View 1 (tube, rainbow, N blue to C red):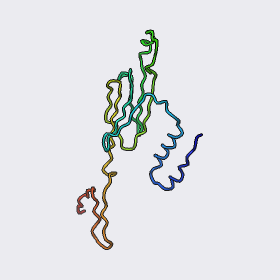
View 2 (tube, rainbow, N blue to C red):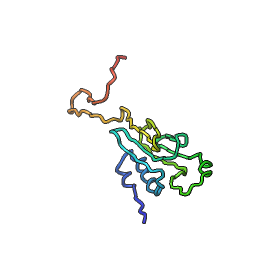
View 3 (cartoon, rainbow, N blue to C red):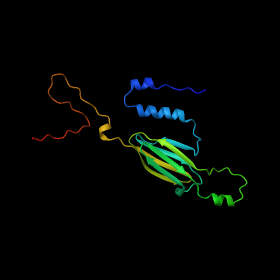
View 4 (cartoon, rainbow, N blue to C red):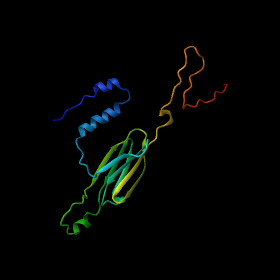
Amino acid sequence: MRTEFDFEPLFRATVGFDRMLDALRAAMQAGQPDGFPPYDIERIGEDRYRITLAVAGFSPEEVAVTVQPNLLVIAGEQHRQAERQARQVLHSGIATRAFEQRFDLADHVRVTGAHLENGLLTIELERDLPAAMRPRRIEIRQAGTSAPPRIEGYREEPRTAA
């Protein structure tokens, strides 16, 4: 039994979350991914993340990591099929099929590196919020005072006489 959720009430109560709600709706409609290759997603700091994929049997030349706006695509395809077919394999339990994993990235998340070691592909990510988007404290002043409000974390440019 499949239930369709209506996000319309959330659109009325939120501002600026429409992309997130659209992504949630798309994820619910996409169905179950096949889960290959298996992967972990870790938070390794306040603004740092790590994705680790098990890609045993793939060389660095056979795996492509591509970053698009708000999307990370990891694809792999082995080029050694002729070599594998030349052998007489009695049992084939090691997956060698092509794969593609997609990860939606939040705004301001960038890939800082990738490396392959011992069959594990590790991709490092970091969230880098611009200074204008970081939280800041706004001073509340009494009505009738003439001093402009002081905003913590905001640097006011010196005024020059024109």
